[in-house]
Length: 438
Image (cartoon, rainbow, N blue to C red; front, side, top):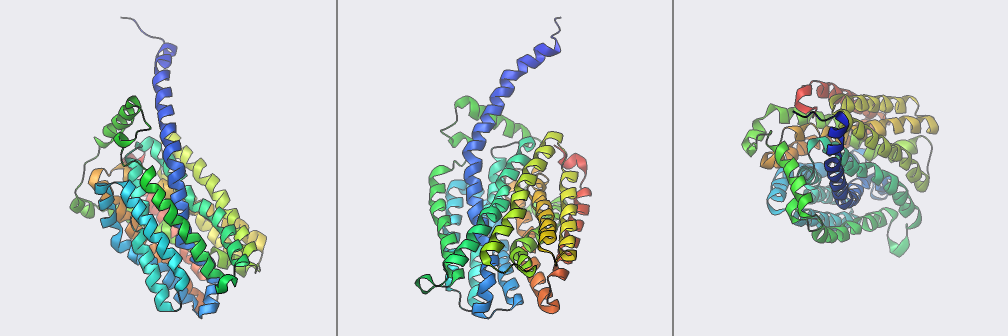
């Protein structure tokens, strides 16, 4: 029997490996930049209220608690409609449903310019959450249609780098709008902020209907051989996962553990997202444009950290420590931002560490539940985890706002968020490695 040399074996593999790599590169360049753009405008519309707050509270006589409740009530609407929205997406396809989500949230976000009272603030923020429900878990689900587990962490990180990019782009943009447009056509600076950052979502939503393909076999830009390769890899991976019913997903303790872990990390995320401009202002920076430029620094560093750590996780196929260590570093950064709060330079260094740590945990976290969920169970499970986890988006800004009203400082709120990140790291390490290291 002839025995091939290692070089011959390696050589025989290269064409197939090269074809597979080229195929996934083709898919990546087709999908990820567009999905990233969608998420940038989505996230910007979700958190630009943090910049509007710099002047909105004074104009409308809102307390910090009113702001925190309004910022967070978004997530109640998000929570209530998340699971049904994702199940609908699984049935009707991403193209139609993501387009619907983006158009409605863009219109409601622009409608925030009409806020005149606490009640109208609460109602529009709640409706914005209803409109956006299903977008993020829908994209996470959508990526499972195209990528197997060993490639998904990096793709998810590239997609979720939109959170950081929205800070890099949105901070200076929001600061410039508020610095330049106040008084134009009789509108306040924060009113222009909502209009100019809301309408692009509508336009991109319309483009989504024509650009996205629901499934691999719908993609006319792929050859038959490329489709066969992609579909075979997905079938092989899903064969090892039970297709759980929606009822079984709700009864699965692993799903509830994932929800608690995600809740802990999202507490940190929205603490930073909604309060970063306020924290920077408290260090002595007053001009809205300068605050906007400074917020780009932590987010820019976070983009690099997210991509590098996710590549390492995919290369080593290790997930838990790649999630826990950034979460712990995020907690350290939040604590240092309090201790160094009197110095803009030191506080920015601490906030940069915190933002890098917090944002790096998020895309890697999704490698945990998608390692054991498939089919309609994945649609329901991902949405359930995301909706329960995002309740932290309600708790976090409200708690920080309430603590700021009580103590006249954001310090206690930052300590609370740091504890939450440590808890998330510990819970992540409690997950069996054999379940998630794929």
